Amino acid sequence: MTVQGRVLSLAVQAALSGATGRSCGYGVAPATADKPSGNTIPYTVLYPQGGTASGPPFGDSQADGRMVYQVSSIGTTAEQAEWMADKVRVALFGKSVKGDFATAIVAAGHTVIGREIDKEDGPVVSNGVYSYISRVVLHVTTPDS
Image 1 (cartoon, helix red, strand yellow):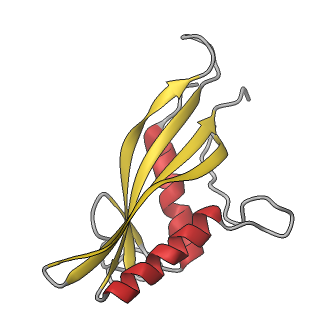
Image 2 (cartoon, one colour):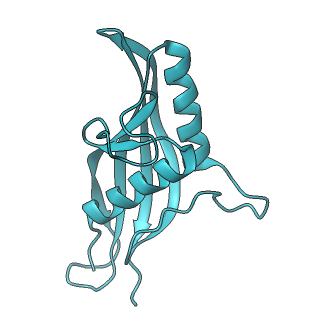
């Protein structure tokens, strides 16, 4: 199967919310009812940035992809936004004692085989709200079932 962006995005969103203990919106600020913390600052917003396909020839049942995401960590102060960005970094790149990633990104039909930081922009302020931007790359494959 081909890499399905939405499926992977929802898995990343769930991993961020679970591992940081704060809500993560999908393209917008979290809603009041979103778990675990609603729209109370600090929170994160996940913005899928697209990706590229690679791997087997067209029509093959397996595919690989390089998917790019922007994670905006939102806070009321520069320190709080940076603290949230630190939590995101630990959530996505922290390792367990076995050496694998501590936070699994579980997406049906997909396996995340690599993770990397593409770029980070430190805290900036707009209208009294601080954001810290992190661009993350996930390398995924869709193994035959």
